[in-house]
Image (tube, rainbow, N blue to C red):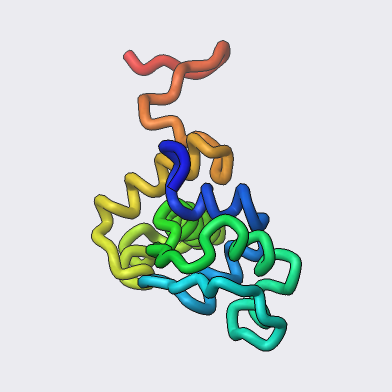
Length: 137
């Protein structure tokens, strides 16, 4: 591979995001032998298109690529799913059961969702008094 980018970033830089996504969806995770010629009836060509296949072969023809599932993508989807359930009013305990995580993990994902702007920030400190509030005592 060329730089310090991940394998999928390198592939995407050559064949494009959509073709890379299709490649991983159809043939990943695992090893993928890139053929030495871009045959129009090859399974990879049918999945990603002739143009992307020509670029893939030009860059990695005859080589084996290790296709991984994009962990960042899957994590971001999990954060989004948790945010949607919480936003819809589902209790964290129930969300944890649905996604197969602990409540603590759901709280962490909620914090990530808040940082990303998917959920409004939750004030975790005592509310401040407003002018005119009654003071006990």
